Image (cartoon, rainbow, N blue to C red; front, side, top):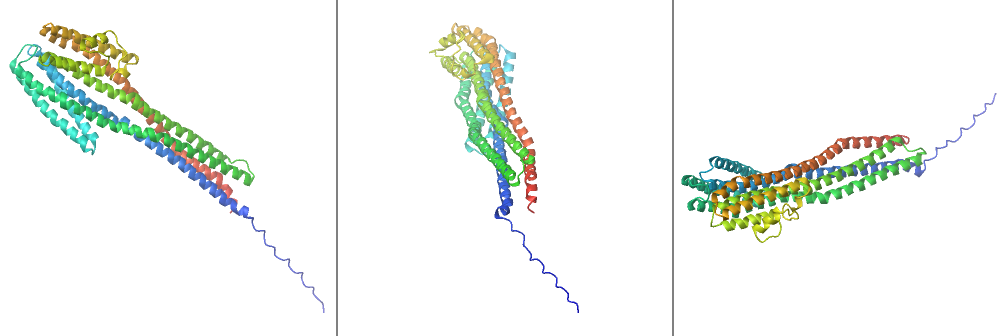
Length: 461
């Protein structure tokens, strides 16, 4: 019998070596760094979105909503003051200047329509503020009373059929009631209404001037944090997997740096645009609107000076007060003031003081001096008892000088309005460019991060 040899025993099974704790921790660390990077990028883009939204809100309020409405509301003072000036001029003309009287009454109606439109805008701008709404309602009520008194004075004047110059006492008494209501009630209310509405623009600007630098700083901090996380992720992957830096993460880092620089630059541009629009343009436009309104009232004082003999001195003093509020030079009386202005005084304070720079500013100063010279000639004729000559000078030489001055003020205001529009447009364009690029930057950087990390994580599956 043949003996069979038993097969050799199988070698014992050797278990594969267990992964080291360090190797097991690599995917977790990759995920942690990736999560921190994504969170930092999200923080960066959130800060950019909040900052740009805040800047757009400021540009919208100051440049498109409240700002233009406040300027339009400032036109209420101009419309009201010119209404009273046109009534005074029509009463002064008597029956000697039929065409000019008709023109004055037509302008009165036009200004009344402008005043109503400005009050409507003021009511819209008041929102839910009960105090401002009461002010608007008060001006509306007062304007109705003024129109009745002015209409009575014009009707009595037409019936009297007097020669050019002071009308009968009955007409003057009725007009006094109307002009007192205008000068003592309506014009101060209109001015206060403009100041109240202007607080919307001022508060918006102050808020944005505080917030935008903080938001820009937040963008910088978030951007640096995101760049730091991206660099840390790349260094870790390069050392752990013994590879050079991945191109996807390098492109993501460069794109993030560009987004950071572009975003902070846009926020800086918007802050500068808001500053220029508010400080250098809007404030000047509003100042010049007030200047035109006071100037129109000042021209009306010329007519009132000739119209009401009993109050001639009062109207001469109010003419001087208004002149000095616009173009201040020290003087104790109107004659001294006009002599200084017409002799080329340029170092002036008042509303026009800060605006008298550049060619257009010098044009305004020259035209204002011409108007004051024409007024001085008019008063010399009145003091000499040449009433008809003074009335003719008021309606020709003085009116022409005032129109030239008013055109110069309008031209200067137009320059500031153009600067205002450019500043707002520049800020809006910068934001539009940012928002066109921001979605692509977010999507592109996200895809690049995934492309740089995903292949490394697959090696551990």
